[in-house]
Amino acid sequence: MSSSNIQLHRNDLPAGISFGAMVAIDTETMGLRPERDRLCLVQLSAGDGTAHLVQLIPPSLGGQGYECPNLRALLLDQNVKKLFHFGRFDIAMIRQHLGIETSPVICTKIAAKLVRTFTDRHGLRDLCRELLSVEISKQQQSSDWGSPDLTPEQLAYAASDVLHLHALWAKLEALLAREGRLALAEACFKFLPARAHLDLLGYEVPDLFSH
Image 1 (cartoon, rainbow, N blue to C red):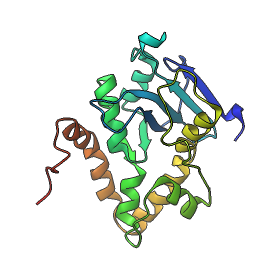
Image 2 (cartoon, one colour):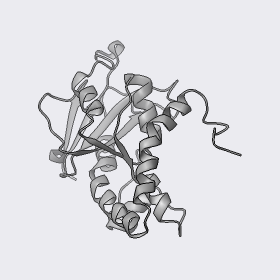
Image 3 (cartoon, rainbow, N blue to C red):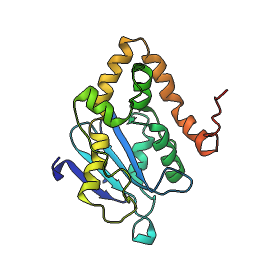
């Protein structure tokens, strides 16, 4: 992947960028606890081979924190579908730190679990390999995303998490339609923001729906 495929923006998206009817989104954070760990990066792609990375820098490091009106407007736009992989986590992070509920949403991990019941491999790396014949690296997954100066390796890793989601969703959507589970998937997607809100309220463990 050449650096020209990755556009890094500090503090907010530039005005005037359009992602069309569907935008792939991922986040990088300081950890896995939304109430504790900082949201550091939001990655976005229109599925056109370009990734836009918005680095959210706290005022203590010279940034403007979560004052990102252009990013917020996109996340709130009801005319743009937001495409995630494991959206439950990203939606919770966005709600916790930006104070907004993003919708409508699609989640390729939920789609994979609904239709690929012959396997327990539903991670992004496995799905890209098996459905798209694309290899992505997870080497930088546990790196320090709070650094004000991200490395080229970090940027490439972050970009890879959104560049293939449109193609992946096309494959999974076709499988869901084939197996008669597309309407069920859409119902699950619609519930995802509420599921993320429940997580933030402490209903993650024990799960509210466990028996």
